[in-house]
Length: 186
Image (cartoon, rainbow, N blue to C red; front, side, top):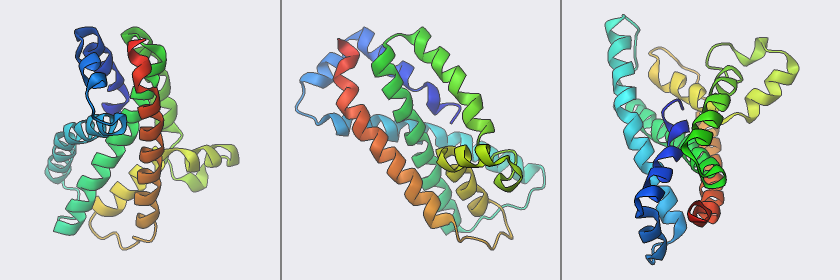
């Protein structure tokens, strides 16, 4: 999330360099452009996941190294980065300047992080914060990554929900971003 939430700045740079104009005159569907950028953000997030795995193993954390679990982690990392990068691109299409996108990204990062289950279990949160945590896509990303990454975790019951919610949110944000994408050059 921390890297992908600032991905919208890249399309502002591309607009300033004239690349976006070339994309928009091509016959490529806007959704394909957005999904390509989202996939790019996901691929950029993979080295961070590898570093986390290596650090966890060095620190003695028992990690699940099952190939299917590793594949699930890759899919979740790509989906999570795609989700937050499309959200960032929507902000960039609306605000159109690097400074504003950077400011909004900074404002959104910490509330999204603290209103998820990344630090505290949802069950000990106040009721109003539990509602926000259940709407926050980061909650599902963290839940899925915990289930797949940690060895000895036998509760995989919510894993399907985690994948479906992240995929659905990413697709909704990508469609919305595709509709707003031409506004970046206005």
